[in-house]
Image (cartoon, rainbow, N blue to C red; front, side):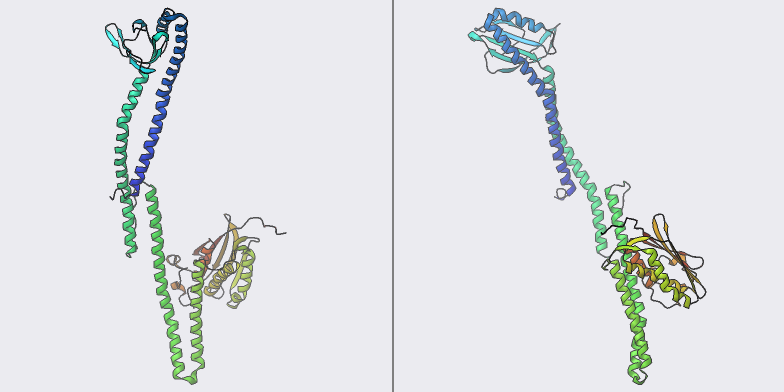
Length: 457
C-alpha cells in the first residue's frame, strides 16, 4: 500500500502507460508502413491482373488464357507469380501452385507455395486471388509475400513478449525510483520534524550528484540558516531590549520614588523622570521604525531623487554641529546623480550617518563626505577620524543596541546604524564599514536611475 501511495511510483505507472501507448502507436505505424501497406499494394496489383485475365478468358477461353499465365509465371519480378487455371470439373489446365482449396470459399487466400529445387524445398507464402470464371471455371493468381509474412510473424512474436516485459520492467523501475526518491523525501521530512521540534540546527543531507533534490536541499538549508540567524537575532534583540530598558526604567522609578518621598524637591526628580521617559520613547520609536521598514510596511513614496542635492542639504544641515565641536565637515559631491527611493527615508539614513560621524569624531577632527559614480552605481562615502571600529565588530555594528567597545563612553542608544541598515535594505542597496585609518569609513552603494525623464505635458 505504501508503494502505491507513493507519488513517484504513480508517476512511474503513468509514464509506463504513456510509454506503452507510444510504443504501440509506433509499432502500429511500423506495421502499416512495412507490412499492411505492401500487402495492400500486392492486393491492388492482383486485382488489376485478375480483371485483365478474366477479360482474356471471356474472349478466348482457357486456350487463350493458359499461355498468358505461363508467360506471367516466367516473367522476372521481385515477387514470384503463381497461378492455377481449373476447368469446371476441377481438372487443371495450367498451374505452378502445389495445392489450393478444392472449392471456392473466399476471395483472398494465403497458400503455401513451396518450390522443390535440386532435392531441397524452398518455402514460400503466396497471397492469392480466387476468381470464378464463366462456365464455373476457376482462376487463382498470386504473388510471393514470404518476406512480408516473416516480418509480420516476427513483429507479432516480438509484441507477445515485449509488452509484458515492458510492463514488468516499468513496475520494477518505478519501485526502484520510488524507493530512491522516497529516501530523499524522508530525509527532508525528518529534518523538518526536527526543526518543528525546536532543533534549528537540523539540516538536510546533500548528495554528490548535484541533481534537483540536491539543489532543493541547498535552498532549504539556506532558508533554515536564515531562519536560525533571524531567530538568533530576535533573541539577541530581546535580550538587548530587556537590558537597555532596565536602566532607564530603574532611573525613572527611582526619580518617581524620590518625588513621592520629597515632594518639595520636585523639580530635579521630575526633570530626570522626563529625561528617562524621553529615552524610553526614543527607543520604542526607533524599534518601531526599524520593524516597519524591514517589514515593508512603511508608506514609502518611491520617486526619482536627486541624491547629489540631498547630500548637500544634509551637509549644510549638520555643518553648524560640526563647527560647534571644532570639526571640519567637507563634501565632494558629483552633480546630477539620481536614484529611486523615498526621499524622507534616504535623508534620515544620511542624517544618521553624519550624526554618528560627528558624535564620535573628537574636536579638531575631520568628517569627509563624497558622492560619486562607481561601476554604474552611486557610491556615498562618509569618513571620520574618530576611534573607528575593530574588524571583528564591523559585522555586528548594524545590529540593534550593539555598541563597539571603543565608543561605549559616548551617549547613544545603539540604534542609529540599525535604522540605516533597514533603510539601505529597503532600497535594495548595500552598506559596508571599513577602516578610514584612522576612524571609520561607511560606504553606501545605491542603484542609479539613469532613465530619461518622462514628459507630462
